Length: 116
Length: 109
Image (cartoon, rainbow over all chains, first blue to last red; front, side, top):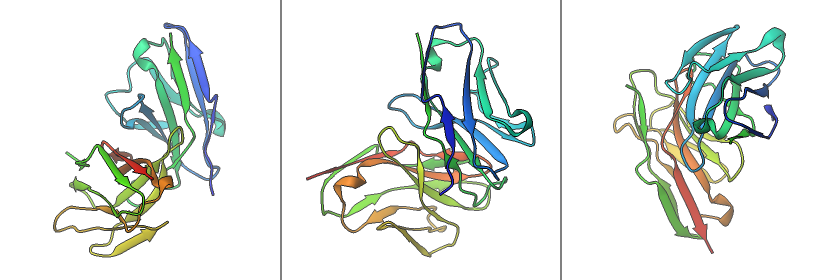
């Protein structure tokens, strides 16, 4: 079935540094999402993105966070600067439809971010 | 606001016994409910989805029926397998997924 890829699978950085998480969504999908999952806790929505713009973001999507997808390349989540509480697994998802109703979101395998 | 409620945080049962994971929801929009399953260190995957009232939906031995009158979408399976051990999320989709808190299912031999 359709697959979403995420690079890298694991990233370790020092607090205050910048990190970019990369997502390669399903090729014909139009909507992209980032979710955050702290170890042992539930999955939480961060942001969704369509047509080059952020459509909706949650309170977890701090000012230090940004997303983009330049020229159909990777859909990226950048954190600058990072904080200890940013340590989590970040899941990218994509879907072919927007308002969302019945659209299934396909999830990548996640990037485990560890901020030291 | 929109919400999905899963009352059990952890369900532990013996292989071969029936499974029932509860899910109720509250939404102001059209009702499309999902069950996602997340195995350890893996991404969530769609297990079931439904938008039709009182119609049973089945996949991989699991089934669920959306009951709009009671705002419920409980997940059931007649006989649990060891491989069913995972985290199960009930979810609603309105341009982003509203996940419930999740129910950890542990199936023991």
